[in-house]
Amino acid sequence: MAATVVATAVGVASAPAIAEPADTATDAQKQLKELGRQAEELTEQYKKAQDDRAKRQDELHRANADAEQAVRIGDAARAEEARFRERVDEFAKASYQGARMSKLSALLVSESPDDFLDRSSAMDVLAGDNDDAVRALARATDQAEGAERRSAEGRDRAARAESEAARLEGEIARRKGEMDARIAEVKEQYESLSEQEQDSLSGGGSDVGSLPGSGAAIEAVNAALSKQGSPYVFGAKGPEQFDCSGLVQWAFRQAGVSLPSSTQSQISEGQEVSQSNMKPGDVIFFYSSGSHDGIYIGGGKMVHAPTEGQDVTVEVVEYMGEINTVRRFAN
Image (cartoon, rainbow, N blue to C red):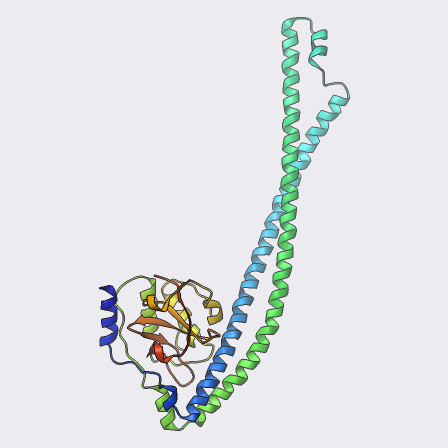
């Protein structure tokens, strides 16, 4: 019944723009679409490098914090070790000087049974204290050595994370250069289209109303639908301009679900679902590279940020091209 309600709600909304089938598009529009896909893929690679750098920087902070905590624990353990080592040394010195006696010697020097019992009890206490001190020393030593190992491991992790973050800085700069060059080609190609071709490409937009229901998935859908008509901008993450992954990330953030910023990072999140089991809120990734995504709204339709010259809109999924995978980030 819920599925029927959703399908009906989507179906009765005003008709969304439908992607123009490739065989009716002009050569200039086809060229723009291909350039747009290439630019989009480079943009997602650039954003993925940014996501990876952010992870490495977080790892660097955690590793440094772990190392610092391990140093503090190690210092405290070494202080305990020194204290108990002093006590053990005192017992050892006393034993060497003859303070430690056997039960037989206590019996021989005792003047009465009570005196023997007193001496025996005192010896038991001393022996117990010595054993406790030895055990405490061993614990403190183990704790100190363990803390020092963790500190060294933390420093090693931090060094690796710092090195990887530095490498990614260069990767980001390279990707951005490639992305900017391709985006410039896209914009140039778009400007070369006739006014009629540009109007045809835009498709007139869509005006699909909110879906009924509750839960994070529906909240994300409705957040994305509220942005219909917002312009597409490569690399934009909202709240007024979007690219495809930027819209997905922004919409789910409104529903309290945190996602990375690139399709290549998002595609590893959540749970994979089959196309036959899609429900509103599932995210569909397209092409072998997974470089484009949109949010399924039910009724065979999705809301997404398409490409240069097109605003956030609702389109029929089957017109979008090859589906790579479908992921569920929320229910």
